[in-house]
Image (cartoon, rainbow, N blue to C red; front, side, top):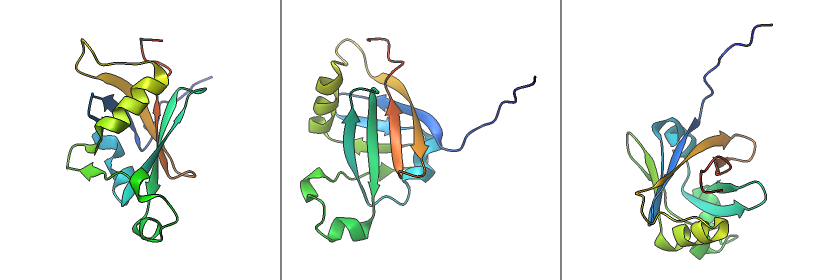
Length: 126
């Protein structure tokens, strides 16, 4: 039986640095319409979820404004900057970037959840 290779839209890479996380060009379109993001960790599945928040949601005061992070988008990458966020992520998973510049992980967009998911299950430090 033949199994064909297909390129999936919005599959890419995430690079975790000490003070920010960047998403590869393949994920820019997935994040392009996000006004802000909320971040959650799934320790059991070793994933980080970047949940898109619309401007209406952000301004409605339904969500705590302190939990909403800005997404910077350029032509080649998207970035979420927050040293506190990165510390939370590294502590949640027992990871660090000491001695390295960054940690590279696979990432993809879940259309139903409107969420970019960073999969840390393949990170070497486990």
